[in-house]
Length: 284
Image (cartoon, rainbow, N blue to C red):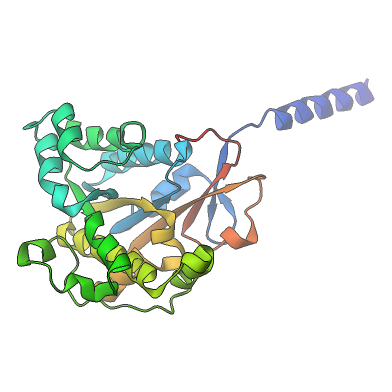
């Protein structure tokens, strides 16, 4: 009877384990698995949180909205995103205050192709709960000019109005930052110093507009591609250069075949790493 009972427990345990089909796990920077609740508790203590995503990751987009809701219950909140460009701030504000509808917003603002599925829910939440939402990214034309027309000097000829949409010039630029070097390695023959400069002006501009609209009485939650904040570089490098005393938090999103142990290369990317099953459905 005792052996039968032990056998039954083993079978039930095996079934329980085999049915553990969560598509993601959350880890801290050292690779220790943590709960969503503990991540939320830690992030609530921050001034500015950078949520790094893989742009087509459904889990990341769902967690962005859930985190927004949960922080909003506890603290005054401001949102911001790489996915909206600074010269479209007027359209974002008009949509949030109801001056224009969704159709007009879609036709007047430059929106990413996955806006409707991945970012509209965040903007809708901001509208419905009277939250400010900051467009932080450089207008893409100017980043393209940096890449194609000789680097950061291509911005010197911009008008005063146009310069108001980017980080104040000249920006600090360190081509030796490890993540910028990774860009060159990833791009191979297509890589160039100008490509890294284009990345830097995006990072600097996002940092500038985060700080421009940050309020000490609020938590600023910013959404961006993970590469813009991994390993405390990119946006965070510029934030810390200007405001080193603020309390920053970071999240990164990665995919793995086995989500039950964080791979070495993904440790240290952020304070919290969302590890998503590589077979999880993507949004595009």
